[in-house]
Structures are given as C-alpha cells and as structure tokens.
Length: 215
Ligand code: B12
Image (cartoon, rainbow, N blue to C red):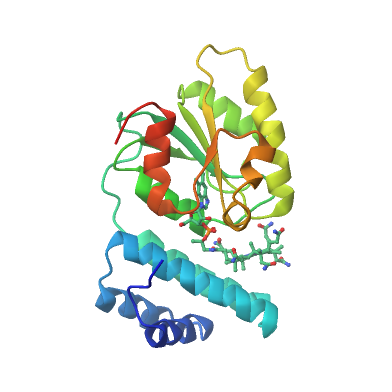
C-alpha cells in the first residue's frame, strides 16, 4: 500500500519516538493531520521499521517500549466516532489473546469498528473464559481476537473449540488478526477461525460479511 507520507518524514518521526520525544511526535502527527486510513498506513510502517531496527540493529527493547507508549498515545488521541456499546450492525467482543500484551493493532481495529458495531474491548491478555463469558453476557455476534505472539496464536484453536462446545443458540463467529496472520494469510484456517483481516482498514467490511450485512 503506498504511503501517504514520504520515507524522509517517516524517518523523522521514527527518530522522535526512538529518542523518547513525546511532544515532538504528537506535534508531527498534529501537523501531518492524517486521515484515519493514512494514519494506519503510517503507524504500521513505523512499527515495522522499529521491528527491523530492533532485530537488525539490536535496539534495546526498553527503547522500543518507550517508542510504543508514545505511539499508543497518538492512537488514543484519535477520536472515536461513536460511543462504546451502542447498538448498531451487531455486537463485537474484542481483545488481545492471553499472554499477549500487544495493544496497538487491536486499538486501531477498534477505531475502525466503532462507527458500525457495538464494540466491547476487553483489553490485552484476555483469557478464553473471559472471551466466552463476555460473548455470552453481551450476546455477541463476533469475537475478534488480536494475537501477535505465536504462543497466543496457538491458543486460538482452544477458543474456537470453547465457542463450538458452548450451549448458547447463536454462536458468535471468530475473527482473528495480527502480524502472524498478515505474514501467513492461511494461518487463520489452522486456528479454526471463521475469518481474518490483514489490516484495520478492511476489518469493518469483514465483520459486515460475518453478520450477513452487505456493504
Ligand atoms: C511494538 C511491539 C512491542 C511493544 C508492544 C507495545 C504495545 N502497546 O502494543 C513492546 C515493546 C511492549 C513489545 C513487547 C514484546 N514483544 Co513485541 N513487537 C512489537 C512490534 C515491533 C510491532 C507490533 C505493532 O504494534 N505493530 C503495529 C500494529 C498497528 O500492527 P499489528 O499489531 O500487526 O495490527 C494490524 C494488523 O495485524 C491487524 N490486526 C491486529 N489485530 C487484529 C485483530 C483482528 C481481529 C483483526 C481482524 C485484525 C487485526 O490490524 C492492525 C492495524 O492495521 C512487533 C513486530 C511486528 N512487526 O509486528 C513485535 C513482536 C510482535 N514482539 C515480539 C516479542 C518477542 C515481544 C516480547 C516477548 C519481547 C520480550 N523479550 O519481552 C514482548 C512480549 C510481551 C507480551 N507477552 O506480549 C515478537 C513476537 C514473536 C512471535 N511471533 O512470537 C515480534 C514479532 C518481534 C519479532 N520480530 O520477533 N512488543
């Protein structure tokens, strides 16, 4: 996907986050005034470059951690278009799988679902039991799970089995996503999930498809 911002500008904001310059980063994003869609492209690009530098240049994890915190703040400054939990095309339980604390991708996904769906965000490190009990409580149409760690990906099959074993009449669909699924688009089939989406930009469309609404 083509970047709405030049590589030079991206390098500049990456330098800000790697130096822990929170205010300069926020100012950069304010001045860039990106559309929601372009924001996702820029953030994914920044994080992939941080990953590369972490792996190749051996940048310490603490620096990546601080950089991520700043980017998280940028993502959170993004306005929600609608309030949490209002009835719309359906109800979605969202969370990052247990043992996994990666939140950035999940939070972006949430931004793109909120205009269309009632979204209940359970946060990170969410157990299978918590996904199931919340899906039951809110009569969810979809359980949407983010998983970036391979260990978390491997737990998805158990989650699917728990959904299938549940007694409630309308079983929620399972939607999964995160970097491992983007790298290997066929991986989601091994988890038994009903669908996956490679980026927040197409997640609402995928959910509409899952609840049988044509867009
Ligand atoms: C930033 C980052 C961190 C930050 C997280 C900050 C935060 N608040 O999230 C910090 C520094 C804390 C961190 C910690 C760790 N990390 Co880390 N991290 C990353 C990194 C560099 C980027 C992730 C990211 O935010 N990407 C940007 C977002 C926007 O992209 P995304 O998550 O893929 O989401 C998009 C799509 O995938 C999709 N999507 C996401 N979720 C969902 C859900 C659904 C339902 C759908 C449909 C779509 C969807 O939409 C999103 C937006 O378009 C990745 C490498 C990578 N390239 O992914 C490693 C990476 C995931 N981390 C890794 C590791 C090893 C760790 C640590 C274990 C390191 C350590 N030694 O402690 C810990 C793990 C802690 C834990 N238990 O969770 C490994 C995982 C290896 C593996 N596969 O098992 C990776 C791949 C790095 C690597 N190259 O080895 N990490």
